[in-house]
Length: 300
Ligand code: GDP
Ligand code: K
Ligand code: MG
Picture 1 (cartoon, rainbow, N blue to C red):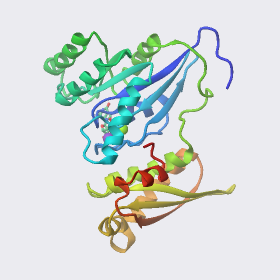
Picture 2: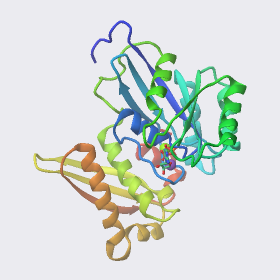
Picture 3: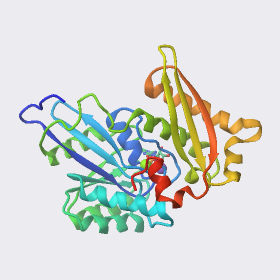
Picture 4: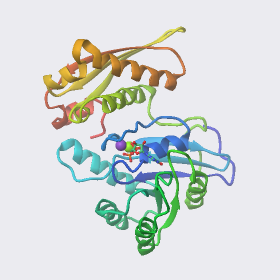
């Protein structure tokens, strides 16, 4: 890691918010590469994932978190606990809300959590592209929230990139002088294997029924690189035989669709040709088991 210039700033920015407000989409846009998977399904993001943006004046390390919500099972508790740790361990919190709808109870629940911490907070009102026409009611609901806690507010679209330079400047203003925490050309702290597993999980989220995605865990068993092609072997762990059936599909059609879409995503990630082989394995109750969670790479 090179030595930072004298006036260089750096720090960790926690991206916090309800599920589906666009936290992962925002992080991908800011770092300029798809490192976090996104989908219209809540609870897409499970682990804390760092995205790194280095500019000539600063290094911003974004910590993407699962959306904050009430836990229903052990994995849910782990998710909420990780989000709370994220709030305490960062230099700035970027509280992201969905500006296409009014401020709701879910946002206020998080706002209350945030006021208990000392960390500076910026309110990021996302999805500005989706507001069909200017809505004073929606805008007021968020300005009221920001005003009551004296938070700075910035409006943007994570999807189109509108407003992101302003957001970036505001974040840099809040950072202190600091070193390069990561090499300037790195965009994430996660190994390529982890992102590969996530890209497979993303296709399962997009292609299968509601209940299945939340019961899967991907293990990348092997990555073999040759000059011509990268061969990836992955196991999709599920909890029940019925889920295995759905994942494989009629005559293997579903698994084939997941595999071919995930392969395309992985090819973009590594910028090379990929051969992807997927296996489905039943591991009853993996969600409830901390040992299994740890084995599968979750921070428990
Ligand atoms: P997360 O759960 O907060 O990480 O949200 P995601 O990043 O997974 O996004 C949830 C959904 O909102 C996805 O379907 C995204 O495509 C969509 N989304 C995110 N940001 C924007 C935005 O700026 N504009 C619009 N129109 N949709 C967005
Ligand atoms: K999501
Ligand atoms: Mg997410």
